[in-house]
Image (cartoon, rainbow, N blue to C red; front, side):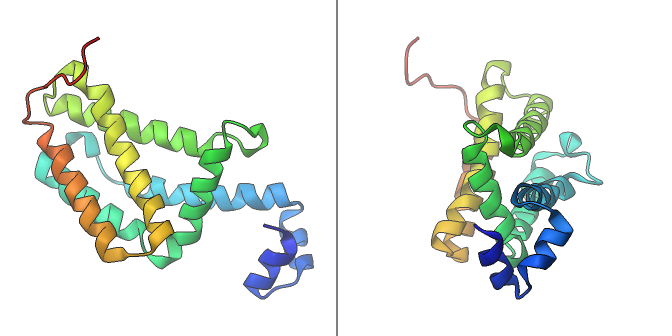
Length: 173
């Protein structure tokens, strides 16, 4: 994405972008900071770790629906791209990796408080986070809201079912 293409898409001159952001990297930083803020806003004012299962499922459902609103599409796209680049381009920073870590730790705490077997908590919390992030990114690729919400509901049912399902080892160590 160049200043010129972005300015054209926004209907402004490249001068406006250069004046306000200085460089392409500063513009990317500002956009990523704003897009990650969407994820932070979902957490504000909620003691998610203390939610019961029904409250957690309802909160996840509502937060997920809000994240798919058209106003968030560009931010999710940039998060996807930045997340893919963070490991290979040090200039991008670690915003998406850090956001993923925060969500995973939050889900670990919640799962522990729900009584999930301690050995299952790390993988299940990672699955919860990957499901949220991944389903959002998938939505960007096919733009089918109904199918995305249906997929999310299935994933949420499977994740919540982990709380009542004894561990079955598919692979031996």
